[in-house]
Amino acid sequence: MKSLFVDTSAWVAIVNRRDQYHTIASEFYRKSFKEYDRLLTTNLVAAESFILLRLDCGLDIALSWWDRITTSLKVEMIYIDAELTSGAFNYLRKFKDQRFSLTDAVSFTVMEQKNIQEAFAFDVHFSVAGFIKFP
Image 1 (cartoon, rainbow, N blue to C red):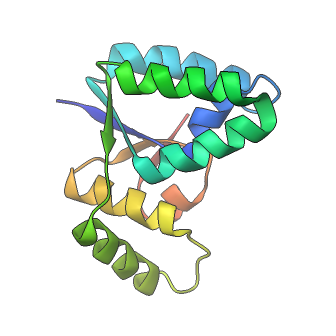
Image 2: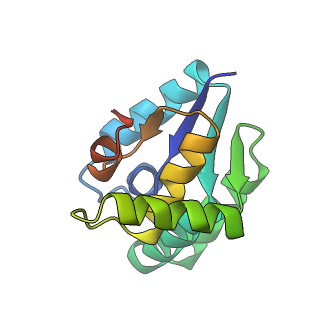
């Protein structure tokens, strides 16, 4: 089963029409539904995405996005636990010279554990951590 990790930067770009990456994100998102069996994200990514969408686009749009991803058969939300958090802090220690957020590090840990190499993201940190970033 081919999976793609979806980052905050991608979710926001898909939904927010004023985002600089909106057009390319929307096109890649439609394409990803055909090319990938599963789109994975985390509850931390979702929390970041929700607040950014609420602030930039309003509560109704943020809630609509939340409803779509949580009812989609293609999207799987990974909820973090102590093991993922511990793995994330290992990433933060390994990449001391980088300004990764905890959300980034949890994302990398999930990708590593699930053997996912590809991320839908506009955040360069995914490339720095050794993953393939699309689009």
